[in-house]
Amino acid sequence: MARSKSYIATPPGATIKEQLEYRGMSQREFAKRMDYSEKFISQLINGQVELTPNTAHRLEMVLGVPSAFWMSLEARYREKLLQVEEENSIDEDIQIAKKFPYAQMARLGWVEPTRSAAEKVCELRKFFEVVRLSLLGEDRLAPGIAYRRQKETAESEYALLAWAQKAKIDARGITTGKINVGKLEESVSKLRELATMDPAEFQPILVSMLAECGIATVFLPHLEHTFLNGATFYDGPKIVLALTLRGADADKFWFSLFHELAHVIYGHIGRTAGTTEEEERSADAFARDTLIPPEAYAQFAAGKKTRSSVESFANRVRIAPGIVVGRLQKDGYLTYGQLNGLKVRYQFAE
Image (cartoon, rainbow, N blue to C red; front, top):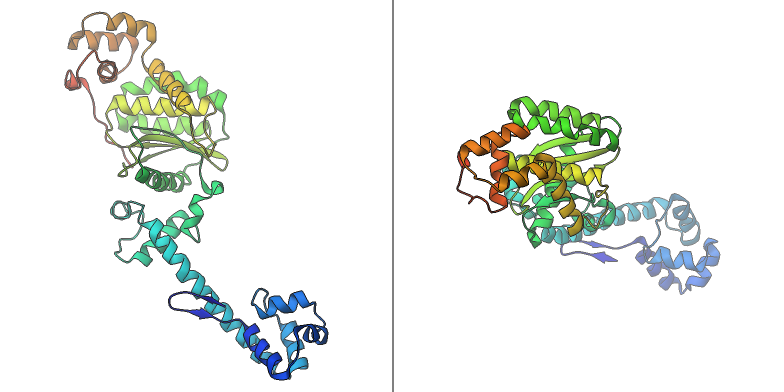
């Protein structure tokens, strides 16, 4: 017997047991008459095995009760059992659903808006493509994400999971070639050249170039509590590279892009444990030195940092002035309020 708050599922075995008690027949004798093992009869009575048409026929012969009656009992039991399991799993999943930023996901059109806890569970199950939200905790469903974000909280793990799922869904519409890390490494300098262009110009070129390397690039809105700038992970035969529109200043965008590409080049993705602090630092170094040559930057940083000097240096190393400003602010040569007029804030077509 199985039960939930609203349902009770009683197996046909309960009726079989009543019949045996009425006849004063032991399970051992009944097993012999049915030509089944005692173990099977015990499982049948306890609802642990399905009552098949063959078993129903044998019950009719031994107990004199029509096989149709037994099949009807079995059908009702299985229906009630599903209701019990569904209600119990809903209760568990309602607690899990509370951990996701559902209201914002609904505003973004990722799930349908609703105030019903049960409907939220159903919407999230469909969004994550699982029969139970509790399955999301299993290693086989974790995407092995390498990511760059500013901080981490208990809420951020669930927000990250939702964000990554949306990236995976959107990436399905992007056709890519086979994953080719060597080709990606060869493309880094050409990708860097895009940093001086407007988003409307470089976005389709960027997506196309990375697709040739087996990488599907998607742009997503920032989801509360993720604190994400970007993430990369495997999804079947392709790599998904997702970039958030959070604080989409040019310097942050390009740093995040090359940070994520470093994870791909260095082989940091695909592990359920995620990346280590050392791997994050190495990805930071790759992005930093790719955008601005380290020797040239060291010489420039030792001198004056005026608007004209920044523009002159940026022109010399062929990078956007705002990216240089962002680096100088990060390194403490400028305050975060200085020379922001050279920064560009991107708007992307989602």
